[in-house]
Image (cartoon, rainbow, N blue to C red; front, side, top):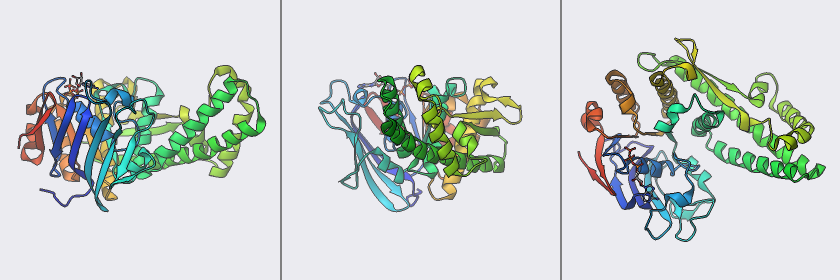
Length: 378
Ligand SMILES: Nc1ncnc2c1ncn2[C@@H]1O[C@H](COP(=O)(O)OP(=O)(O)OP(=O)(O)O)[C@@H](O)[C@H]1O
């Protein structure tokens, strides 16, 4: 079934990965349902898939934490991705003894890649986890990371630029903390921050415009429409000025703010402070003031809008939906499943109770997960 479909995994192997010594699953292109009791290792498999994209995965975990307790040290995820360019073999992990490494090794079709950023060219991966139920009520950081992951779907280099910006930001903060007021050194860093920063802000603005269009085009039957906006000085400035002017202004403001930032112990302005603002359109209410179920539905609506846009470009994302079904009533669950199937998405969905996925029937490939073992059910 769907054997010719691109943008999916056809094989996933994890080794010494959290609760797994080794597990291997063959995937036929249908959405994937993973069921099993609490702690069985369902989320661990989603985390393994999330590491096939740039970044630290859906738990944002330190790499050392992922290596299986009692294993040889180190861990690996290997997969075959079916992409529009053909099958791609992806491997990533940490070698035994290198657990403290800040970066993981990445191999693509047998060749070493320079970093996890290279993964973005092959697969788009987006997730919703129970921890994200609090996305609208907690600080801006998680919302920014959620947005940046959506941006990476359209612009795989975005993640690399965010990392580069953050590296320079940390260096400026360190110099200011050490009282180093060297004009040429700081000035050079601030120029780099402005260059990366404006590119980051511009990519966010562009993605937001696309998402707005897709949200407006969707029917609102099951997932409420979100009004989305960006709060951030660079993002807002780009609406009224050419990017070069926004960049020059930012360089000037950073230079003028050195004493202030040194006093604060951090840089108080920049795209690292931006926020994604979300309102429930029909209720005309900020997302954070909506019910838990409404917040979840808003998030799903945004993720589906993003998936529709990417699917139309032939780059449908893998969706990792951890415990998603438990929070949705039957009608919404059905609507979500229908859309996943209609878009041909390889969604990986977890739950403790197979009944929650009954509506999918043979449209999904189902697996039972038990301590360290994964068994296909259909
Ligand atoms: N580095 C590690 N080595 C061995 N086991 C680990 C490691 N990290 C986590 N685990 C174990 O993995 C299990 C958690 O797996 P996971 O989060 O995938 O469960 P789950 O099936 O999603 O459960 P739930 O339904 O409760 O969300 C726990 O038993 C935990 O102790």
